[in-house]
View 1 (cartoon, rainbow, N blue to C red):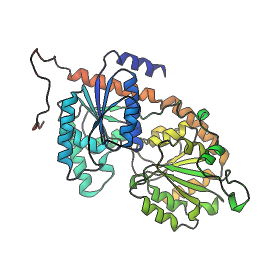
View 2: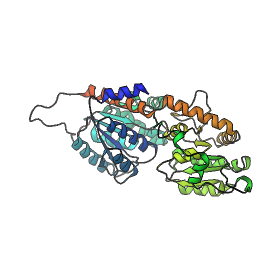
View 3: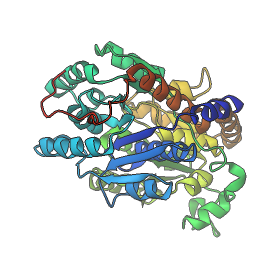
View 4: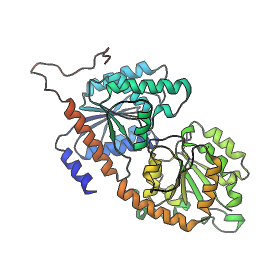
Amino acid sequence: MPHARLTARRLRVVPLTILHVSQPVDGGVARVVVDLLRGQAEDGHRVLLACPPRSPLADAAEAVGATVLPWTAVRAPGPGLPGEVAALRRLVAEAHPDLVHLHSAKAGLAGRLAVRGVFPTVFQPHAWSFAAVGGPLAAASRFWERWAVRWTDRLLCVSEQERAEGESAGVRGRWALAPNGVDLERFDPVRLPLQDRARELLGLSGPGPEGRDGPGDAAPLVVCVGRLCRQKGQDVLLRAWSAIPARIPGARLALVGDGPERAALEALAAGLPDPGSVVFAGRTEDPRDWYAAADLLVLPSRWEGMALVPLEAMACGCPVLLTDVAGARECLEPGETLLPVDDEHALREALAARLADPVACLAAGARARERMAEHHDVRATRAAVLTVYQEVVAERRIPAPAAGGSAARIPAGKSD
């Protein structure tokens, strides 16, 4: 992507001190954050990350050259929020960044309460918090997002649909767009093991379909990579899967990830007609072997901003089956089928149709790889984000303090 490289080179002329703040510390959000940290550090910026210490995100951030500022915070708002805000306020004041980039709802809440517009602030929701809840909680979340715009220089979305959802909720801020991207070299199919070898590495070799002797490497494999939680819809997938092994002999489903719904999902799987067709693989630091092993990647999410897992899978040449949530339509080819949210019947029929036509699956995977190369190169994402930073910093730039003056401080009671 020549344009992305030229943009990044131009932005390196003015190195920035960038403070990222993130909670969650795993999953797609964490991978997006690490990709930004890596690229910004390589471009010569001073890159800081405030996140819970001794976490997957903290370890990965240090490995790519970022300085980790320990910030003890839980994933969801709770009684500890005032202490989390105070701790973050101190970290920001000590770091004195050129810009603060807040990732996801919790960091967006604590971060904007801590910074209150004193430093240039970019908020990236990675899916809106009000999409995850209903009733009074959703109303409160929408009210907060509308209110917090006063402390937000840019609302950075990963898809046009995510932006539209924010506008529909009454969020009236200044918008920017940077679709998620993937490292096309890291997820190059040429660098991955062949399907049979990937399945062997993952311990998936075994009896063949219908009990035939020999390894079952030819049996269709569906993979779902994601945190085991309500958002990702694995419960809908398991209900849809109940009839698949009878229709597609030997078919297997691997749920890759961990999370708060694991016990409930395992209980649901145990009650299926063929519980042995479902594998709970647990959490993985590197899902590439799963993408290489799969015939199809399925993510039946209830809400997203633009999920990273389908982009990674498509970059590896693996076809995907997605629900119609924010970002899904934009990452697929025009006209490709998207499934209704929470519709197990539609998902069951789509799974059966895809697995019954392996040639079409292979062709879809090849087209998916081409689309990622054209539209979702992580270098273009980094360049777009850096452009937003430079615009925000330029708008907020103020003269340096006179000799003997003091640097900007975050007042304890700044309200607007």
